[in-house]
Length: 422
Ligand SMILES: [Zn+2]
Image (cartoon, rainbow, N blue to C red):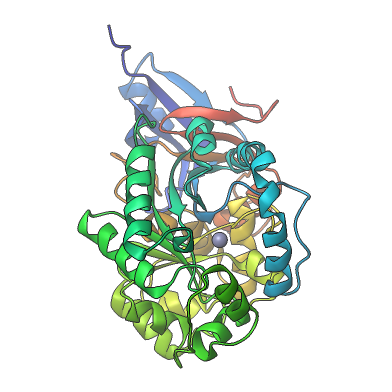
């Protein structure tokens, strides 16, 4: 016999649904993993007598964080020196032969860290989807974008056939809310023919695509002029001719039909012009903003306010622990809010609902609304204690260890010891 669906009420002095105004003494009725109702605790209790109430007395309930661009497989405390993308990348490449030894454990720890800091959905990119097992067992909802290296194959057709088959086989036997898609890693690792063909295949079957785009000054120089550090990498790895395209990475990506509503482009940090923003808006591509990684690697600042003003879907990503100090998406977002002068409301939305929109999953998660999955973070923050907006208060608390509980699909997968729930 199947188990009866669980019904539970989560309640706190403040609930921030993000898609609706803040609610004092609010609560969520959760049934079978989804939010059945959002309302006042008093009312939900009266209408649902006998249902267990998990009350968090000094906390705020918010949607769980959506990390739209992360790599799980990098080991904490072992990052290559930053400062410049080329130096960092050189060191990273030199360590690749050893990675099998530490990637699984690093991935497990990165996922755990994301959960303990309030993340409920995570988009991960790894070579041939190697971090899928650790994401799938973590309790997170999420997608692994499987990167592929066409130069390991005889032709673009063979490479794309392989990654498509790989994705198909990786999808077997996964938890309901874990998926696998394709990533075209970057312009300097994937030749234009393979990139275009992969995007075509993904589009044909209604899949989704991730890519790194316009990240570093080195990438800009490579795409535009065909020179510099990445031209050497491309010549060595891909062993194909590459001439400068005379256009920006964004325009190059458009020219090979990589950009569209179901593609998420990570970084967009260096040299993104007005014209590029036009391209991004026109194609409907989404952006993953990873400001701490950009700073560490000597990349520029992504024009996020301008992209938001043009209606481009922007979500937040931590990237991985070799370019970022933590997997804490709220901390990443607080950094972005300070960097761009965004208010708390915009910040909290970026960390949650905007991320869901960027990944095209806003019908399922990203805000506290009836019908969506009960994906939430419980944060140690009480209304009005610090004088800043409740949203900023939540970001500040969650950025510095203040997540008391994380709930994915109605299931509490993390509870901070001694958090005071009753
Ligand atoms: Zn990345």
